[in-house]
Picture 1 (tube, rainbow, N blue to C red):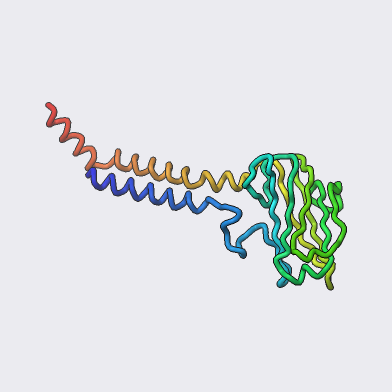
Picture 2 (picture 1 turned 120 degrees about the vertical axis):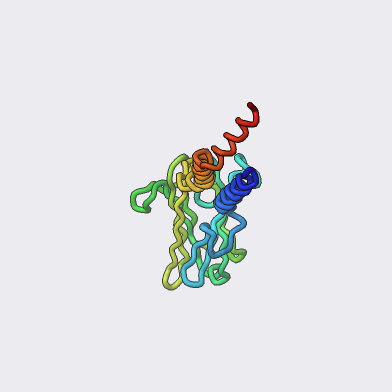
Length: 194
């Protein structure tokens, strides 16, 4: 009986760990196709990295920025053909280009090295970054930033594994407590004591 309980408990722990490990996502360790910081139009690909050295010297972020303040935005022009056309960038406070206030703007220029870098002071809230490659036709890439805001989807993904595991353990404990075998085993132990 104890062996069965141990086996079931071990299965529950392994199941919870499997659920929990799938929720961990690191920005730098995902495949290019799954990277939320990549934007693709046809064969043209760009990548955004945001840094806040005053918060975390080694951390880099994409669209969820942990703290308001100075942020370094780096756009990598992954596709070499983008390095041969003028590219501009505009940062707007708000969710829509028409309704927001322009925080920063970089005039279109050629970036032979494939890197566009700028610093900007970001307050708490939402921002829109529009990157325009002046090709034929023009290519418009958008990033929606959230600065110092709670990402409820991330919180949910982080907690779902442990909550499911706790519920399974509770159900298992209830079933074991209510099982006839356990009551008989407990009864036999009580009779041995007397």
